[in-house]
Length: 407
Image (cartoon, rainbow, N blue to C red; front, side, top):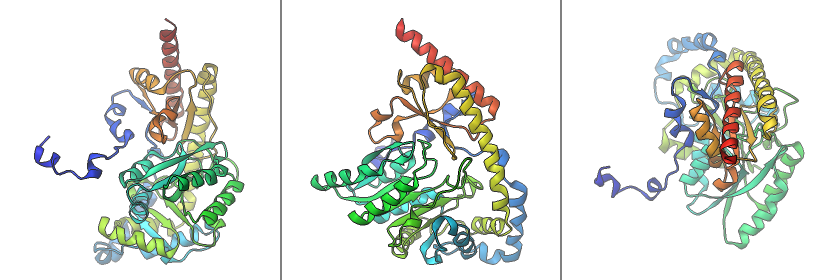
């Protein structure tokens, strides 16, 4: 390492938290490796031909699309989203209440710029999305974790946490929640808890960040109203993404909320990337306006439902007899498994030897020790046959660890 750089790093740079999944890429890409690690969509469901149809927009409006675009986002795309999301949002939001982002991950960064001072506190589920923890942490946040059960965040525990934080002099800036098909826990927050969360937000004057990248990928049951839809006072910020319903390569997300917070985030986006790719936004808008998004969602859902069910059956066959438990997700990408009799760090090492990878539970938890008996597995990318083989290998790894522990 060059000393000239080392001597001049920022405090944030010296304390930055990398993504454990990104750090694992070299391991995951080994020949013959079965990966349940990254939350990757299946490439066979990418709508390549229909997306390509929109390429004519470059000929039609290339002079504008190849120019710098509006930081707020491409108006035709925002207009589509305002109408398309209205049933979930409870109303059609105005364009001033929406910001197009470079993936929903950017929304996490922008809200951090707008809300977090070093030493502030964010309330999250425990476990929660590790890249959200990374984004908030890198902006200087501390965390209070609220446990998750099969109905999502146990919101009844939030008031006590807020009261305790106030007594300790901690400043809580917002509550972060993934309400649908939680990453990693797979749970969906009940309607009763969604309403209760809004009540708590109002009572304590603490806003809510509702992250919903998986909400439209539902396999069972009915879609639930967003937390945003229960709030008429502007206290909820809602983030969505095309990564799971079209393609992560588009890098297009959106965030909806009160005009004031949207404006703050827009100003920070001006300094971050000026604007998200106007060309990509135009291609996505064209795809959506032609009705292809609504046509294609059932294709995605049918593909992933088969894989979820295949993983469920493999778990029942190979892991349940070995004491492993889980909650069956109604949608989304992930299972969250509990291994009560061993640590998943040990299991991961043994599994890698058998050419199968997953993500251990510790990076998803506020205190890493909370996740030592848990693991997240993604089912959307591999085929059902590969899922069966991968789960079988995990079971073999469990057996070998159990035998060595008895020896």
